[in-house]
Amino acid sequence: MTVRGQFITFEGTEGVGKSTQIANAADTLRELGVDCIVTREPGGTPMAEAIRELLLAPRNEPVNDLTELLLMFAARAQHLHTLILPALERGRWVLCDRFTDATFAYQGGGRGMPGEKIALLENLVQGDVRPDHVVLLDAPVETGMARARHRGELDRFEQEAVSFFQRIRETYLARAAADPDRYAIVDASASLEQVSARVSELMCKFQSHLL
Ligand code: TMP
Image (cartoon, rainbow, N blue to C red; front, side):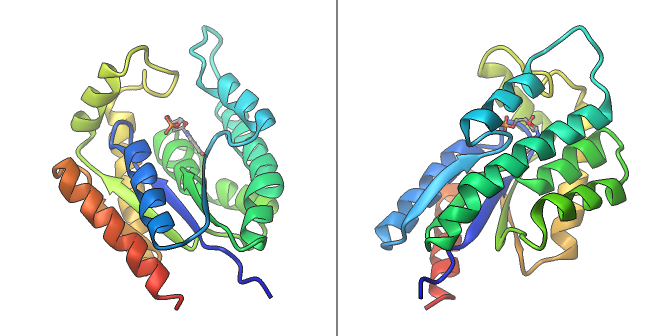
């Protein structure tokens, strides 16, 4: 029998270095002989990537909070059921750049959507599927926003005010504090070498716990 793969998600506010650290985590796991794939939300499949474009494009029309929430979960349903779950069932590990914690943080903390509404959709779309581990890359909002601005044109979320991202950071930290066994908080304001070393160490720990 193939053992189900581990589902690891990476979270944080803008510009905390998630992409770099997911690539580093995948390299570490592959060196340990773990078969893993890297994917992202919103997105990860052609249809979910099309929904991502709808969500991120700056537009003049005001976007209703519920529309945004439903589109996040529409993309997630497609991604989870056609890509993530089949991979996990084949024993592959899935490293995902954001997942439902981002919805609680951005649509919940950021936009003010009630957590119970988000939890309803979480149960509908995911059943009892939750990430095995969440790596939260945490840094002061201003540090990350400066990095995001350097990357070029800002998307619809990146155009939000600092206070929006502060609420998001607080929501992430509160969720991590409530479930410390499943969440690992990494200080993303440390040097690249230090952050990479910590993330690699976490991957080794997750793998060794399964042996
Ligand atoms: P990214 O820039 O990390 O790829 O994420 C795209 C944007 O989508 C980012 O600003 C966070 C936002 N987002 C949500 O608002 N809710 C969600 O559930 C997800 C997955 C992302």
